[in-house]
Image 1: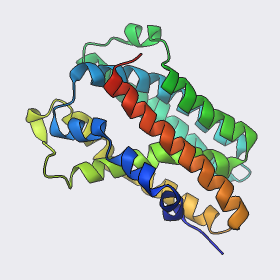
Image 2 (image 1 turned 30 degrees about the horizontal axis):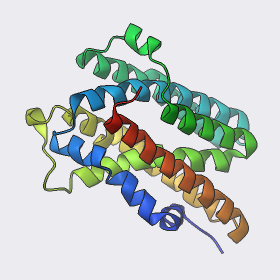
Image 3 (image 1 turned 180 degrees about the vertical axis):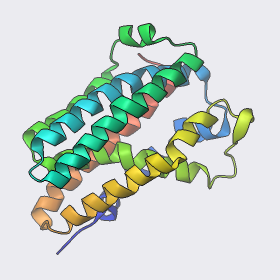
Image 4 (image 1 turned 90 degrees about the vertical axis):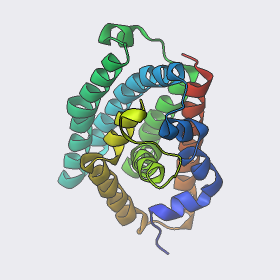
Length: 222
């Protein structure tokens, strides 16, 4: 019996919706999110991206085919050469310098999530690592799409967080999401029930850690 990515979300459907439709996301879309909460999130997300770059470096090490190695390289390059630069510029627009970012201590939620992903990759194989990464890469793309279906979402200059939505609804990120789902679908189609149960546990735990990351922003802890 084969599986696909949607089977992973089905195993933790309630938590997946809590993540995609979190109050942090809803208020960001409506433009009513507390700006201090957003600044807290931005600073922690910078640290988060650094550790996810490490995760893609680990994915390269774990790769056994040239195709998987190239995919890991592309993911690492996207974070280091594109997303982090955009993030630093985004933070600068919000009055947070790169020097400020370098001095920010990791919140407990950031530590818990990023180390969980890295540990899943060290402990398991390449599929374990990709499943642990999936709630972030695929989830952010789905969040941008979901926000654009909501009548409460405000776009343009009236929403101070519009640039965040623009980044994740953009063609580059959306294509990366589609590519990751296709990669996961192909690998999950080959696993049996016992292996899928192991992978669904990783995915579920990573999703809950994403929920905690949003809540950290609302709680304004760093």
